[in-house]
Amino acid sequence: SIADLLGTDGQQFELERIVTSTNDVLKERIRSQQLQSGYVVVAEAQTAGRGRRGRIWQSPFGAHLYLSMYWRLERGMSAAMGLSIAVGVAVAELLQQQGIAGVELKWPNDILIHKAKLAGILVELEGQAAAGADVVIGLGLNVAMPDSVADKIEQDWTDLSQLLGSSVDRNFWVAALIKAIRDCLVLFEQEGIAPFIQRWNRFDAFLGQPVQLKLGEHQVIRGMVLGIDESGALLLRRDGITERFHAGEVSLRHD
Ligand code: BTN
Image (cartoon, rainbow, N blue to C red; front, side, top):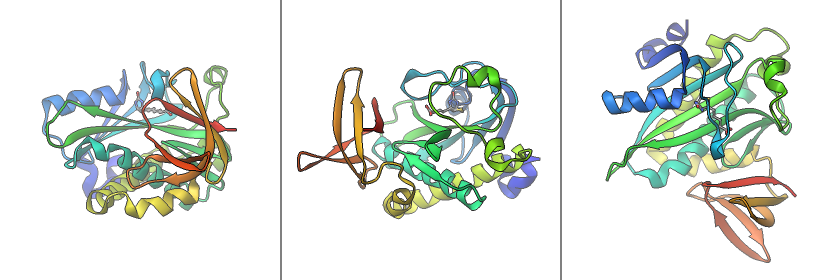
């Protein structure tokens, strides 16, 4: 089981069959319990899974992995951007260690394989603590995309069964993801984003390339990606000037 694979960390974990959204279940737990950083809610299906920018995240039963992890950021929400960078690196490195080629990260937090989306991360904050922040890190990872869902997805996508060619051990992946993300966040807590910048750049799908950055609905900015800075913001070079962008309502595409 997943708990066995997690070993001594097994207690900090909850498996649900069907929920609205694992992010919402976790937010409820944060309000009603004293959670430890690293606590995870996993579900087999979601009826109201959501992605960034208000998009629906199709979450049928048995198709993918849906999980949310709690983390307490003592440094407050200004560190949340860096945290999502650390999580992206954790997932990318795990995929690569498992022999998957072509792993890429798309700022702020998409995980791609040769440009096709494999997984997405949705970081949300719960409550408004004056000092520190309660962070919910939601991860959706495609395992075996059903045709009924594939038809509804507009961007290029891939899933683990295409990449690994055999039946996918879902318990292994859940446990491995939880461990990898927890380890990276412990390091992030101790050392901040610094150890992750180079590691992120190695996977950055856009580094050194011309891009279009969409701000809100109407404004488009063109420039060249220089990487990320020490707050996790995107560095974009345009007209000889380097500008920083924070995730918020920004989306990125190749120009
Ligand atoms: C994105 O790429 O837009 C982010 C997708 C995040 C989806 C996951 S699935 C588990 C968690 N619960 C949700 O409702 N969303 C995240």
